[in-house]
Amino acid sequence: MTSKYWLIVGLGNPGKQYEGTRHNMGFLCLDELASRWSVSFHDHKGLTLLGSGVMRLDSRMEKAFFIKPLTFMNNSGEAVASICEYYGIDPVHVIVCHDDMDLEFGRIKVKAGGSTGGHNGIRSIDASLGTNKYTRVRIGTGHPQRGEHAHQNTIDWVLGEFPLAQRKELPTVLTGAAGATESIVFRGLEATQGKYNAR
Image (cartoon, rainbow, N blue to C red; front, side, top):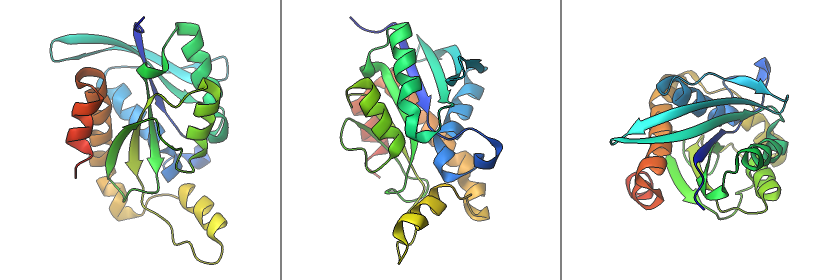
């Protein structure tokens, strides 16, 4: 049975200190989508910020929930699985928007399934849902210099803020990521991949 709803997830870390950091790219994408579809968020059981709305495109209407987990990145799956279970949402109707170091800044790619790419939020969702058969909107942040302290460099990178030049480009990037998310809902995975992945 097909889900009545879509669940659109933005990954990030809650708290002022994480606002505007690379790891919160998913939160930023969700804010863009919420603005487009007049969605407001409220606290849901301390587990996630939850909003709902109706998306209209191409003479169609789709109902969706939008969530920003409050569990911190490494436990994002708890919030996703909880909402899926409560509202009866099948993983194939889940779209997760997240930062991706393996893509240069601003690049957007869409995929379903596959490896976590070392992303702890994706790893948590895979474990909590018991499947990776959901769709991901990967938003490029670029890669840090590995160097001698590779692990710490990676942590500092994802929790760091964008430089000024990239901050100026960020609205355009988020417009693209939100557009990719909408395209998955209304035009399907294959058509969306054809538009966004081939760059």
